Length: 347
Image (cartoon, rainbow, N blue to C red; front, side, top):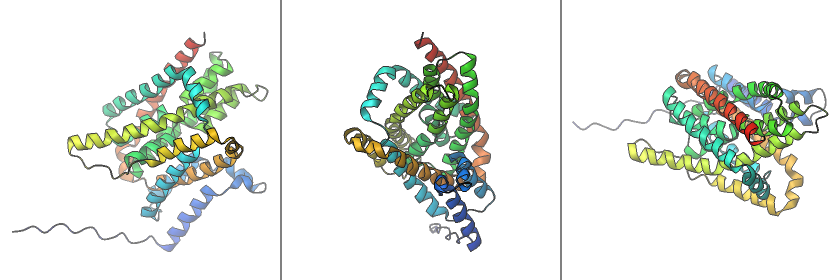
């Protein structure tokens, strides 16, 4: 008897109107330019951070209050890619090359060492290939931006990206307060602490915040400047790592016969390099760097909210604690080794 092919599942009915309205309202809360509002409304910006955007999305998902699931996945991927390209407008290729030439060995060691160690920890903890690769990339390069770029490149699920980003953000918040205390305990100079923070902290904003806190009001901002240079030059590794991750996933799928990713070639990575070239050869672009940072920041916050809203309870139960343990162990090891390297190379 011939078996008929299984019929596709019926389309999911749209969410009720009240739930759609709630979802849109929270999305507007996340993306609204609160800093441009008159006081006291402008103070809302202090609370609507990328971490808060992700958490709000996760809370809606866990409470079953999400809407526009299919549209959210498409919009979040587009936003991520656009924000990665905009990030390139903040990086001068000549500055990056100069910094990579000076600290190239340390950068290569920390980036690829963190990736290798992270993937090994992922195998031991059984976090799954996607989550393990995303956590490792976020720790090695630049937190949420790297997770977004690599996840988009390999076609990672929203749940994998949400779990990985949440784990990284938790540690990033801890490091923002702990690293300055450790730096003062070991008597690091502003330049030493800036180099260490640029390697150890995941998020660009936290790197700048930790540097400013370390130097103090009258410190001249040397720690923050060094930290930002180190972190921004590490962003260049988004390009090769995202491309290498896509090649690895495709090759592994072809070898094992597993379903291949539906992610197209990550052209946005080439757009990132093109934007950096524009910044390099069109000096006037530098004048618009603050506006570019604001647009990219709001776009990334909205993308994080949509990613968090795509988290499933099943995924959280399966890999939630494993992702946090993997990220924590990897972060502690990378931070300790980079602290030793910074002190050793500065003496």
